[in-house]
Image 1 (cartoon, rainbow, N blue to C red):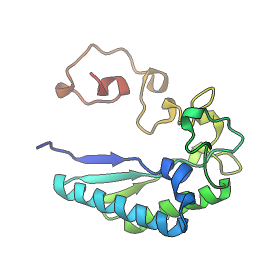
Image 2 (tube, rainbow, N blue to C red; image 1 turned 60 degrees about the vertical axis):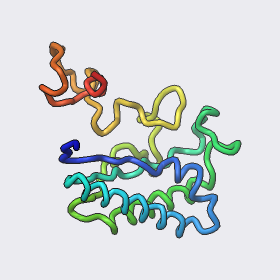
Image 3 (cartoon, helix red, strand yellow; image 1 turned 180 degrees about the vertical axis):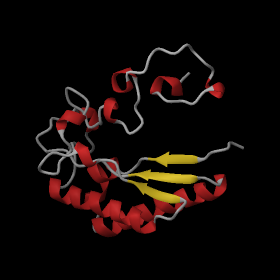
Image 4 (cartoon, rainbow, N blue to C red; image 1 turned 90 degrees about the vertical axis):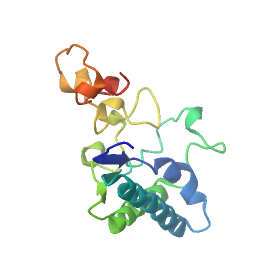
Length: 170
């Protein structure tokens, strides 16, 4: 069985973008979904005797952003107003925080990604248009452009610490 020290999960933005505001009671649906996610995270933490980190959801981007059709669901790029979706995003975060324990914790990391209106700033998103965060701004992205690390001769993964996305796949 694998030996993990920490497992990280990022989930929820698709739920906010397309599903939670469609529910009859978005607040209850959000609380229930977070409870289920957190219950599973606690099961994993216990099973692998490790810490679990739940990443804070990305801020909601401005509705003026042109989203490619691949990001649409049921004919729309999102469901609910920006404010409704942002309220659900904040509720999601608070529910994760309430259910956090020393073994399963919320990881807050988005502070610099927002503009003066509280929206996900376009500067941090894939170009020219996408619903995704640019890889450069991933919490653990440490590719050459980010870290300016010198070229290192290939070392098998088992013999080194993985630090780049490329390393993850080698």
